[in-house]
Image 1 (cartoon, rainbow, N blue to C red):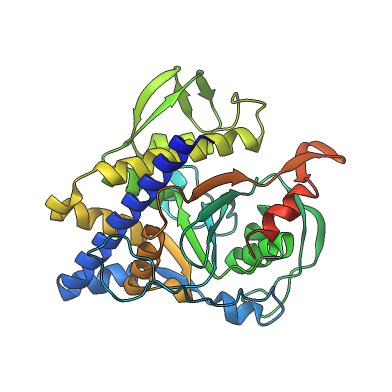
Image 2: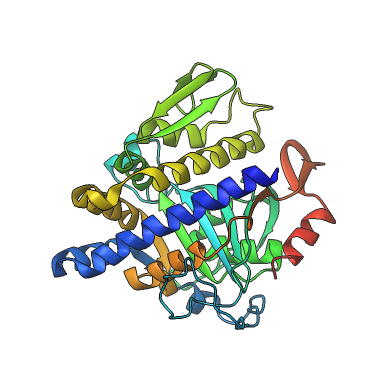
Length: 348
């Protein structure tokens, strides 16, 4: 990645974090009902209690000598410090008519279509986003279930099956076993919420270098530049057939392009002069989220947004976990060693 592209990505990340921060500040300062409603939108899972102590160690907390700030005029209050690793999933986990219309699963058929580990360095000078292909074959560990039982350990399982059989708890445990990295937080966004977020922004603009004709995702686009609404953007994020070699790696490239477009849109949309639009976005953002119990309030999400906003212009890197074709199945991949282990080691 060139320096200009990296600086551009980081500027858009900072802009998006600032917008999220402003949304939550507005919500916190607004009417009591609005604050209560937005807070109640957020669903949470107590992952720490479910997994107990049999997990990778937390990274040591380090306090920088000078707390980073997003601008010279920023509050003197220190931002959260210490290494943070956050598992971000895009899923069809919530049942209902909206998700069903968008191609989502029901309550018994949930899947995680997108998985990214977001790593923040202790001093907030760098951020790394690592995509994990959902077609990766992994050892899926035994996971606790809400009924008090456990799922069996399964070898050569598809990575995204962890969410399907055990929800957020099993997804986190599987990622931790795969990476050896402690996930400090968990954020999940569902199909309907993602589409609503894009619509709240007024759409996103993407450019394709080839025609997309994918009946599975219901997306049909000629090569060129397009303005996508929420339903189309969701289809863009799910498209894989007819792109590259048809594998999940091609879809990841489209997803990274879409994230770029979303960050750019969030950074340029003047929502601060449109209270109704700002509330609509806040409602879409919070209504689409499931988090761990450490991020299940507006105040905690605002702190994370501020922490993201502290990353400087040259500090953002986006990568995909190194993989190779699986020996047992050419349609699946496995972690490429030792490159994958070196990547995860750099995030501990």
